Image 1: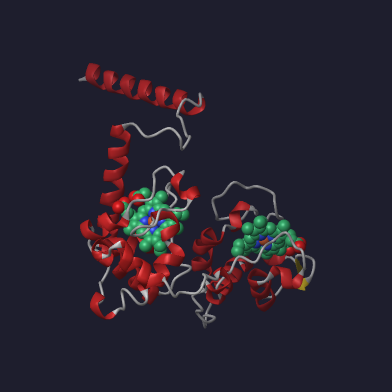
Image 2 (image 1 turned 45 degrees about the horizontal axis):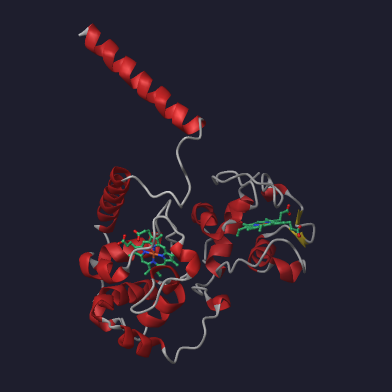
Length: 277
Ligand code: HEC
Ligand code: HEC
């Protein structure tokens, strides 16, 4: 018994050391030009599919027939998805061809996946792939319209798709807001969670938010106790919301860009920042 136990411990230690050597030695090839080994790809794919299945099980699917899959879904798809996934007769944009994993052709996904799983992925995105979460940028009905459109993709020919998007105006990113009003009671915990969705941590160190701690902007430790915001506005909730939504209106040429923060989100993020003492 003792011998078996010792062997197990020895093997586990050896595996741990080998893993550490691969990580610290830099031996894992992180480049997007190096394709995954087939077993790695399969393992990741199974993990992804199982994770989605588990989480999508609680999603309630509305009636997709009355959602306007083509009228409402096609414009959303052209503006937000075709760049990476392509569309019938349309290639992904050149930058997207360099993604590893490459974004799936959704004509296949539309046929093979149930709607709740497509919806879940569109809403939450996929870590460690280029698949963005759309929860912060599309409304609930838009999420379902684009899901319904993906379900219809398998039956669309290239001329069908061309007709659907032929008369659409060019996409205007500055209009990509959900337009949700200010909450009655801002939710600081929600604020902490969605900070992730506005890339704040790429420039600021923010307690409670995991990120590179890169000092592009000032660290936000203790921001709740500071007298001024960016040295320009008295530090109170309404001013913080204004700063988060349009910093360059407050300080022209500020290196902090307008990130298209939705009104509701700005109130919740401001509430979280106020807790940082
Ligand atoms: C910046 C590129 C990019 C954009 C934009 C994008 N995706 Fe993705 N998407 C990906 C990548 C990368 C994956 C992961 C690889 C994969 O599984 O296809 C993915 C995965 C998916 C999947 C899982 C598909 C499968 O079979 O594995 C669905 C569904 C999906 N995206 C739908 C959408 C929809 C709908 C939109 C538009 C609202 C969208 N994506 C926008 C890159 C993108
Ligand atoms: C591209 C980098 C960048 C991103 C992304 C960014 N910021 Fe900033 N931020 C800055 C810079 C630079 C300043 C200092 C600006 C100034 O004083 O004019 C700043 C200032 C601030 C301030 C005032 C800090 C102080 O010391 O008074 C707050 C609060 C803030 N940012 C919060 C956020 C939040 C929340 C997000 C995400 C919604 C965000 N920032 C995204 C660069 C960025």
